[in-house]
Image (tube, rainbow, N blue to C red; front, side, top):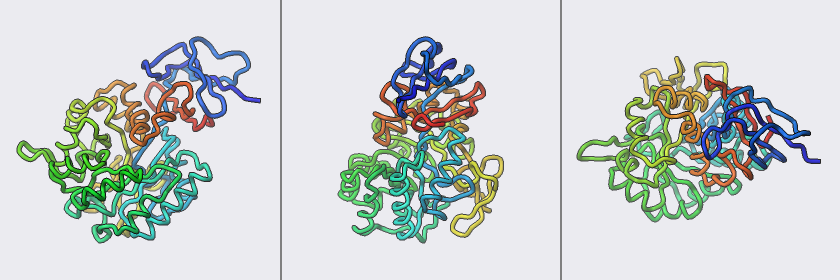
Length: 378
């Protein structure tokens, strides 16, 4: 017998914006209807208590959480721990991110992700390989000794996941357009990041299949009046997707507001670049054997280099509303609808509409998470 769950008495983010006096019906992990009025008789009722019911957040850049770094524990249990840590902040789907590492670690991370998806570990959508095919001139906190040009065997490894999405951040100036086209043809979602690419090089990369840029502004050539750089190429291209870290540290609020205003609606995504302290108990962690410290939401090395973030997706949504002045509906879509579309999952995730998976988040009026559901399960 099918059980119907009814979410009511709140403000529901639909394709028309926030709607009150509607009821969201869920059966077998999917939304079956969004109806006016109260819950039907016989349904299991979830009282939203006047809060905001929004699509579950999807984070395409999660390095760690729950005091665990994916590089240190590229296993199914490691992924389970990281995903569990982020769920309390509304992240119902994520791309666990491997920071530049050796090929054997990459192979273990891909195998663990494949097995986690096979086992149905909640929230794991695929893997994001951030490197090691980057440019040392824009290395950020990555270890440049890991950087190299991949062999054909490595490219085969990168494209080998099979049952989820694969995202690869690379420096396009280190690749031929033929290789970029090959990766795109093999359904790898290629993004530019940690790159010294010129405007022309990234423009050519977009033409060869690069889908977007990883953490816009950070670790890439800036936009200047006579040299638009990677930032200029990304902002100009209406089809490019841009990830934004809205934490008050990575990018100035004014730069974010200008970038969002310059881009077509629906192409800017919130990401966290989260490190182990998110959902954990410790403020310090190690990366490449070096201690990183998180204070007041900022993660840095001893010399002040940013080392990911202590941001969670609910915090990113709050900052987008409170710091950047965007409407809550748009901030939530930047955290759910748009990343789902970027990953090619826009037909099943990221919206509250019939036929979509019941991945949901309940926010209170201060935009803190009061509950989350994956496939209709709390």
